[in-house]
Length: 98
Image (tube, rainbow, N blue to C red; front, top):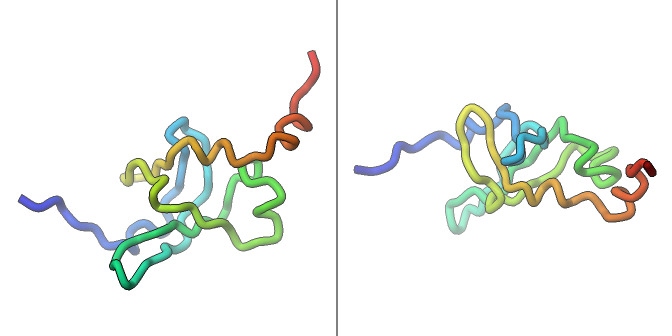
């Protein structure tokens, strides 16, 4: 028996979270490889600027590689690698000395 198929347009509008529960953004579009007939990325808007910092400021959004997608349901779960995109100097600036 084949797995049920789903329209890729059904991804549009779904919220994206890391598998740790951190909000990443909302799917605005999908990136396709027409030669291989497969989804290669998710174009996100309303992104979490705490994750993407200056890289996402002034842009329409970001593209997350589809390889990072862990699960698709009511929301899209992506690998927690997305949480490690912040540059080390950005983390240091946000740390509070105790």
